[in-house]
Length: 114
Length: 116
Image 1 (cartoon, chains in turn cyan, blue):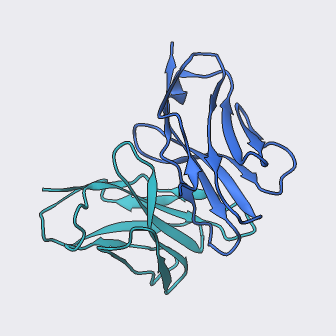
Image 2: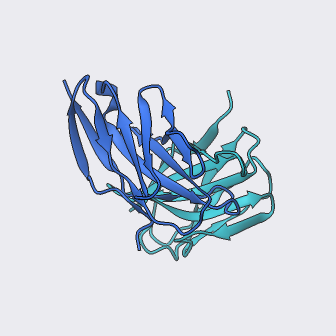
């Protein structure tokens, strides 16, 4: 079955530590995205990548970093510079224009900073 | 300015009745796409329906239809014959142009509760 996997489902981090969230897709999509969701709110774009070895900042990139070395993988690192990292993180992928560009989402990772 | 506005934080509907979730958007790009997603309490985002800015007909997918009023910049989701499993958060989203690799801007969502 094609889809997006994210791991781990729950992640606990101590203040001052970097942590990496995994995102893998086998949909053969070129574009991948990372979103952050705070309780009761919508999704905000952190980073996105249109193609391997290329990525762009979204609306809230400060304190985060990404890499895109393989088409299937788009890991997100939450660094110690991110002041309030406790949130739900969603990874997504999509087909390029002129397709509808609906986004396929992973199950999410819930990060808690202790 | 908000690009996607969902003015209903919470909505209630009786089982088997229809419900409309509001969404207005703001863009100056003539080419855009509008999406609705469902987010159950488990957290995953489920794509429901898509409307392109040049589509002449309103989109429909099973019990979901999108009431697209371009001049009013409105893209309301209509769910017919509500079911208990429809209780979830619903997000409206917009993709502007064809050069943004599909990245979308999301509204703040509407929490729908279906009453038995």
